[in-house]
Length: 237
Image 1 (spheres, rainbow, N blue to C red):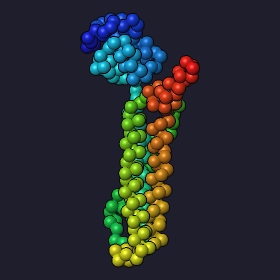
Image 2: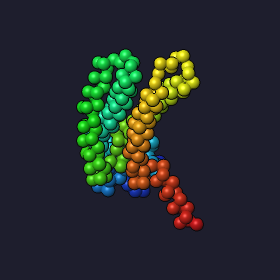
Image 3: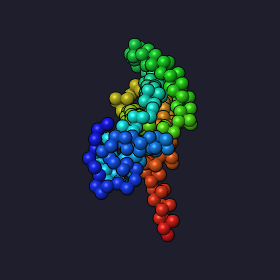
Image 4: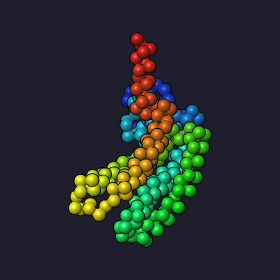
């Protein structure tokens, strides 16, 4: 293990000799046994006078002791996002066919293929994630879980928002009698809006809930910190 510079002032607990790999390993062993959050490990070291870089480096090494289920959470969130994107795109293209618009049939076949393949994988991964979230305490601090959920939430907002803007504009242009939308069907326009809203809002709500599911249990989550601070203030008062 890499030698770290001695903290100042000298620590009184946790790691008595920061230059001793054995002392650091024993400290991390105790934390692992208690399933201490990696960010809490880094915070404890900083409070003992460790430099921020050294504390972060040790905490990252400690994080590597646990399986954060990168592959499983990737399968869940990527397949869920692809299923939603394929369903929305294929739905809009099918509505375009109903409206008499020349639609790329190969593209439609591609998106339907993605939908057929990704949806069962997303469903299986969701069942797997529910089991892991219930049985594995590491799910509380899994970095891939939070990062991928955040990416899905942003993609849902951006793609869904742009599509909603486009289809609402088309409906309003049709109602206003715009020359550009003179051959567009108002009913199909409303159907396109319904497809966008019907996919974007449930997916966004699910992704937000998935991202914040463990906020009450995660000691590093903003809500958890604020609750602890309020409890401390009430106890002082």
